[in-house]
Image 1 (cartoon, rainbow, N blue to C red):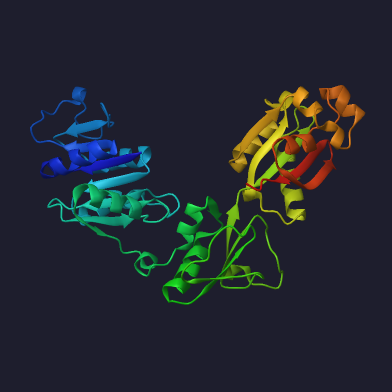
Image 2 (spheres, helix red, strand yellow; image 1 turned 45 degrees about the vertical axis):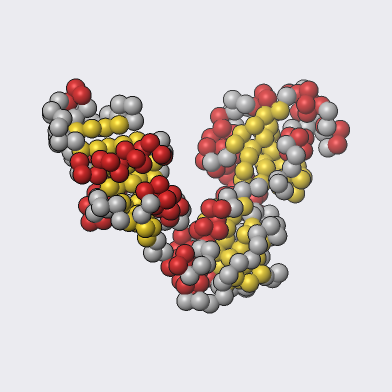
Length: 353
């Protein structure tokens, strides 16, 4: 959601033009309104309420309005000076992977300025869109953009990759800005090498590595290697009823580590229908920020003969195996066959889409 904050009535025409084009929330100061809390005017520290996606007030508490916009938006447009915008958002800034993209349009409608989170927050893209709508001049100051280089965070965003470490991303960006070449090793060979990069077949330092692995060569200094993690691992899990959540998470972490696989690369957990309410699996999917999907007994029976079975599992849930058939049914390639660990079974697959 995009929000527009217009702390001066002089920006009214600009604000309403953008609202109409972008379909976003609007917080606007209008001097003609009477101060009445029941009509959503903000007099002191009262809660901000949007009516038909618009908040109007004549006593405009910019801090409260900005707090509300930050909470409910991923991008914010200020119709103001950059100084007002900076002071308004200062106390809400956290980190470049969490901050909203912020754009400022001056009251004379001369410029659209990308102020904050131009890459990960989408501020630069929004700046160009706003400038086109208002027919003004876009101002983008991020160095890699001005040099025509794809920054690591943009590379990650455009390809749905997870940035391993923002400090490493900053380190790599600094090298690119100094017009030095960065190596790019893509385990999946799907990303084209652009300006500022060279393709690597063997990992080296001062490079970007697109992978689901933890390391490749232990001799390398990984503080100089930025991993962009591909979420493509599928975990098939079977476990005893009421397995403790901590036990299951510890088991999964242990076996991913033993197999040099990054836990942030887990895309989905799969299991049998009877486990759809298994707290440990639900907790694990929430912890990892991944999907959890189950398959029916009938679906599993169609493929269970392909895998080693167990009479105990058959008596318990009606099929001979759970973790491997579920990974197979999800369309993943099995990397690690069934692991048995103290009442837990785990199969690790990869989704090659």
